[in-house]
Image 1 (spheres, one colour):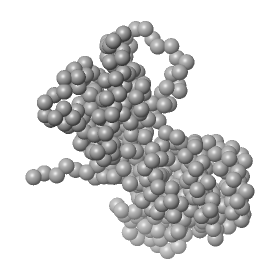
Image 2: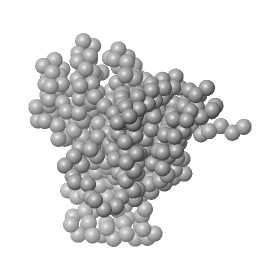
Image 3: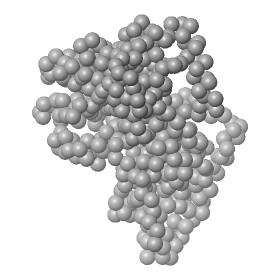
Length: 172
Length: 306
């Protein structure tokens, strides 16, 4: 039976310049990062910001005192990057042409995203990790540092609220 | 059970959840990891030649008249210019000129005029220097804690970075970090200094509170008075009032320096300045009691503001 290398081991190896360890951390956490970004910024900007977040994390990694907190630490960096992005683009007009690598979402997708974004942050992030990124509850718990019980509660309450809101919109 | 499908994907699919998955799955992330920069500088293949050319060029503008002190050396050494080797135990005194030193294979260091520096140890695990006076500019590309510079008032531990360290004739000094992190340490005091920040250190007192160089003048002056001239509560209050979000760097470092009664004021102000930080994970009492685990977690969360 093989044991998964811990995040702490990977963080230590990345600090020593190990590219494979960095790729593995990216594999483990890119969907969590993307989900947090999707809960805050437009989908066509989220992919690029994922890259930014990992570059920022790499720059700041030597300041991380407890490598076991990597997931929560990375999530905080992601939220900050999203906030920074929104602040910088507040007065920027969106280009009409499809310059982004990802096409704009359909109206139906955009409507669901808006409804999710209106939920409390913890519900939004957890639901996007589950419904968009395909992460399971236990995986979400492992990456974010939340307990499985908290993830379950977030998913249930979030989904109940989302049903309610989408139901209201569907009956229009 | 429907709830199991929502939680972990097992059991009979909930139709509404499945519909949403199908609708949204096209947004899922499938990108690759960004390119990771080399952990060490990618020197040209003929780096030795390049370095000698640089030394020759610098000599034309006044580099080179340094002196090496003490007995005939043996053992490991660092290059400190053309025909210059700094051996373990030797002092390098720069006089009116500066010297360029290769820090083993992990970086470079410029030693300014009128500096006095000794190589204490060099190995794969640690490179240790003693800076008695003067100024160094170090650029290190290596894992944390490989380069350590002892000064009379604190020890500077490199955490992978570029920085300036100055020590005056009395042994007091100032550290300014340009990239990465440096930790100024004494056995019972630590100041962790990130890029864009500075920290003073005083003989007999140790490292002061680190601060960002763009902090307000009022805040910087209050910190200097608090650290080195009496620890007045009024100066602490000025720092608390003047602090911006990134100045939580200073407020965090003030917690162990402040009286117990004032620590909650610092914690409360940090909460106001960084509402996005997951404060629900932080135990105020444990932070105020200087519990290492609680402080490490708070440090890690606050770094996102720095």
